[in-house]
Every structure is written in structure tokens, then in C-alpha cells.
Length: 113
Image 1 (tube, rainbow, N blue to C red):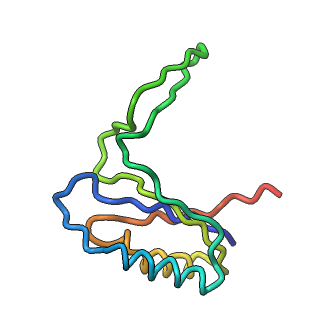
Image 2 (image 1 turned 45 degrees about the horizontal axis):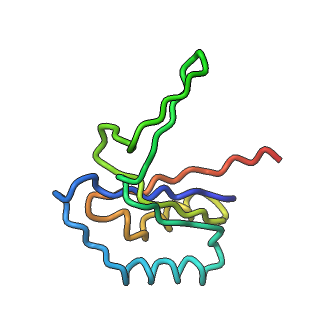
């Protein structure tokens, strides 16, 4: 079953980020070596985001940023293919993004086939 790991980091610098680039390289290598990697990407800085909203009348509004009141910022995602939720949770707990004020949201990928 496929699961998306949504990797969030603290929105401000108040929480020290304990993970390093090397931590991420090790984690990525482990995921790929386990044969569960489907896809994944890091996202560009939040200030590069653009938000689109469409009103009930169909009018489109485009604004710079994703400026919601939140304590976390989506930094990237990973899709893994594992037997069940427990295994997905184990991989999420190993993710460097789950430390230091960050979190990893685990969601199953819907299968409409």
C-alpha cells in the first residue's frame, strides 16, 4: 500500500533543527535500499509559494505566499510503498523531519482503480 509522508518543519527558528544534510542523505539511502521508495521531493522556500482561490461565482484570486497561521511549514513529501500503516509509521518516525519541532503526517494514497 502506498503512503505519503508529508514532512513539516517548524515555521520559525525558535526550535533548533537537529537534522543535518547528512541525516537526510542516510535516510534517503535507507528508504531506497529497502525498496519502498516511489517518489519524493523537497519544496522550495515558503516565500516562493502562490495561493489560488476560486469564489463560488468562479472568480479567481491569486496571492503571493501560503500565509496561514501555522506552526509548521510543509517542506517536502515522500511516497513509499509498504505493507501497512504500522510500517509506514515506523519509516515516518525514522525521518529526520520528525525531530526538532517538525512532524511527518502519514496519509494513505487513495486507490480508485
